[in-house]
Length: 410
Ligand code: SR1
Ligand code: MG
Image (tube, rainbow, N blue to C red; front, side, top):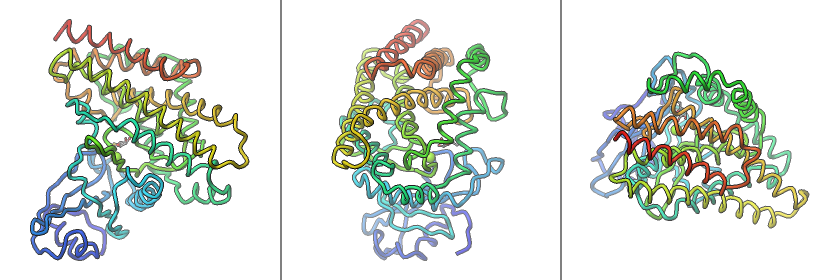
């Protein structure tokens, strides 16, 4: 079928023409379609067969970013890469990746498992959901996807073929521009809360900070360490109380391991700082913040422990002391990437609900100032930070500034 964008009216007819129709959906003639698109980039529909009680997700790439429009072209071919990466991730971390029933390379459509009992993690963090397994699950996902796609586990020739197989130049360029470049210069894509104009000027004038951001961009562009997800923010994770699934790896490629770890930690830090803007009481904000901080710690610990265990099982050519050295490097990179990712969500093109849905601009500015201050500290100080305890100490300190600000003005 020649490519054309699907609409609510076209999805049922399209599905009936695919081999997937008879399986998860039965042969039901009656299909209900709803539009679920809420990310920046793609079309997403849920299709239900009420007669059999089953449903699927139909995700289709558009030739541009949905949230911006045709002025922001995106290659349709990203859907094929997303399909391949989902296959790899599902093989390595089956419990944490949705199943793909069908891929249509002509229509650039993925028909996938409907995680209908799951919710997007970002929203769940703002409504203070109880997610006791999140830290362990994400530590495991990170350890297995990053370790087993790296030179630590793969034949060197095969790994180099994978670097080529997963080249993703256009979407990498989007990340290079939107994360590492545009937020720090005058660019029409950028926007921010006018109450933080002075911080934006200071960030752009900070030559030391700009040099460190350039160093992180360089690492992002030149370190083919593992097949990374490439966009592991809290909108790319779906959760229930006891299940965690990672979706949307369309920005994936062979890049630095710390980029995925940092994306996750940085987005959790934003949710942490934003709590007073959303929580029903100061007390609940305090408690939920404590849980987010604990979860960040569990993610790193679980990741590092599993990574080390995989290392020991693998044996082989890499001498043991290098494992700790490599993990230390991933930690430093993660902290730096976390900082840059926090900044881009406040002063770049694509913002996050954690901050943008705080209606009181003054409270929001307090959160944003604290986040930008913390982000700068992480980017500049990443080589000196001792471990997660110290990371969390800086997070708590930033959090205290926000609490005082929010309570003082709220
Ligand atoms: C046009 S917006 C692009 C952003 O959305 C994705 O989720 C990525 O984070 C990307 O930077
Ligand atoms: Mg996405």
